[in-house]
Image (cartoon, rainbow, N blue to C red):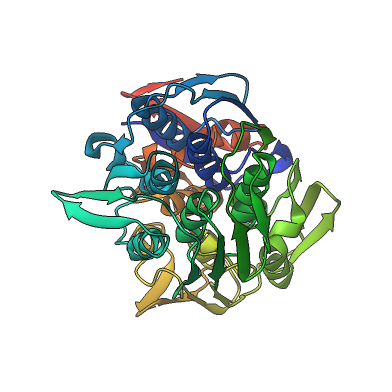
Length: 421
């Protein structure tokens, strides 16, 4: 397995370009199954999860070709509405094919998902949504088997504003007869991006970016070309990297409007920011100030930035509390940060962080995607050398992160089988 070797203590300086959004690209790729034809998707990040979704589409029968941060997807001959366990177990986002398969073929067989190891994320909301639209679902040896004569519009209230369930229901409802209303829908930019793509395909959708989304079903959709939005979590991670190392960094090709809560917290923690329409410049102006964070659904502070914030607060001058209301058990990074010298106490779904004057390099192990990012950030700021093991997790959601960090002056190398490259 690859690992990173990081010699910390170097302030990051320079400019980095933000890649396309993983969490927008995956459902948009799945949405190409809704109508036969050739699609051209641009600004696609080169990530492990994107390759996994491409492989899943090929199993279903689509042709997928990679270009320079672009995909061409041909779904004209897709004819196998099944997502097998051998592939699906590696990525939870594979659930996104359920809605499109049921809408187009009126049947689907999708394995229960796998993915990060840090705890369950129930798929009940996805399944209830499909049933509300007229699907008949059963569980067969670890597979969700769905059938429908026709899908019919419905009024669906989500107990939790789930991004995945909102996207899946929205895709299925585009081809349902009548009107579907999703209440307590997710407002995340990635859902808005998926909705815009569906609109380009001919879907009739209103209310994107609000708590109530209305979809008027159409009889058919058509292929479309589209450009994915920038990845707000990658952008947030690089901003924290600049602050935790006491550096000055500029992000280009990003959407500051998608990061309002993160930017506000960074300023509260001592960062100086200069924001334009598509760029953010950050300068560490002095000591890191302790800043409490509680994660919330968008537009609140994102749970996908929780681990990175704990790493930052580990070096703050004072104490802070980081609470995760979205995924209460998402703290597997804490014991590894403690190995670097962080002073953190966990209680229920809160991390009580007392800042230390210095972290010290040590071997640490990644357990999931965002935990990996937090360990890299802490190692960049730590004195001495750190080894971050199992970086295949970080490859799921960050494109060539070590190369981008090297551009900013970080002393980081990827090691494969004991050899540097």
